[in-house]
Length: 427
Figure (tube, helix red, strand yellow):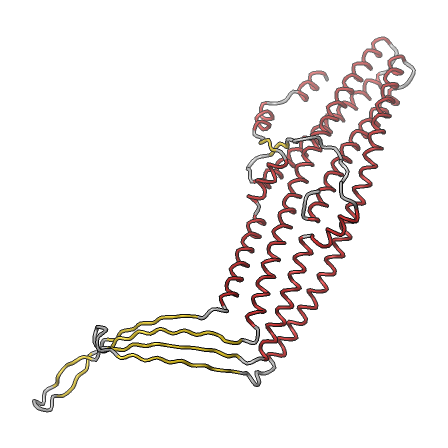
């Protein structure tokens, strides 16, 4: 039995090699690398570039368009010489070039609304990028804290193994002098095996979290989280009312919904522009010559001012207005719902934070009580005043209290990260 336990607890060469392949990172380093490696961030940045291009195009609609053209034509002609009566071969070449420009004088305010919509889309894209950044950071923080949680739980499990070893040795000593039964030794060994199994499970959890974190930061192997400071719950400096009001006004999801409302309102203006006439000014300058050269060519120019108005277009304008109005109503309803959702989520997370702070305090007290109770039971067992069941019960209570304290501490840190993700800024 002793040889089997020694074999179980001795780290293998492959385990040591796997541990050496871990990359150590702080939370800040992991977040920086994740923001560079995240496909969602790359996509959000591309959306901003596309929105900026659309905004430039909307501004360019105010400028006149200018185009140039040039052409040449070479062809042969055959004619009959009336004097000699024989066919004569000649040529009919032509060369031309031109420059034309046009400008929309009035478009029924369509250009103004298109530019407003492009600007709203740019604002929405920027808000979505901010929100996506905090979503990525939340994913990194979750994997980072889960890996640290597993490490601290592994520390608790190792202390449990050490206590179980001591319990096995104590039971064997008491069995040797006849003050204990074989059942005491077997129960102590069962506790040791259970503690070792728990440690193996936690090692697997740590590896899983490390691999998830490695994928997020763009590495092929697991990442070992390196805390840059104490990971203890710290109270939020801002008041609950300030956070809620700031959240409803400045949250990335709210900003994006507000931009969608502006874009939909501009869409109504674009649809309404179809009811106005269109005024267009155009001009052109052309040159023509039958010889390859500028001498002797002919030129012409033209200026044209046109007005067009669709009297009837098969109710297309009416359909466009209905669709635009419907989109505006939907976007307004989505904005109100987004504000309510953000407020509700913030209230939930802040309540969870307050509860976690109180539970952490109570969990610390529970650990202290469990440690003192175990100390008393160990001494009583050594003196033969209690049974192995009572001792194992005290050990299990201490392990449960320590695990609960570790979990509550990291639950608080995760809840705080969730609040920052919803708010779109650090607290």
